[in-house]
Length: 90
Image (cartoon, rainbow, N blue to C red; front, side):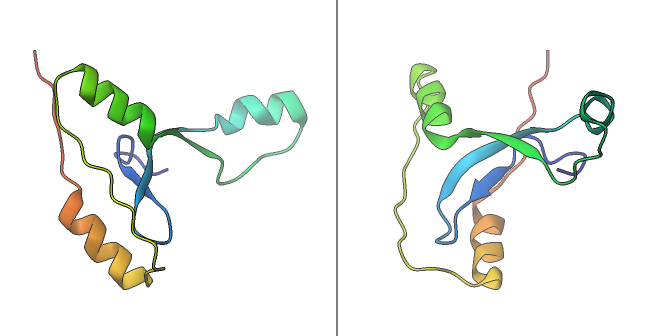
């Protein structure tokens, strides 16, 4: 997870959103706890949890069920057309 990626979609190989990025493992804390430095450990929440939140907030959501595996380029195009920034301001 890179800075600014939290809230971004997590895709399966078919281009379906299966989750949303929320955080990465605190490496320093884990190094103190287990004595080694883990890499690339990230966390997300399930897309179904996001849909429940949207529904309970009165917002529409749509579930796609693509089954054909996509190339990296196709996945990038899907992501480009689906992702957008949402800002909450007071």
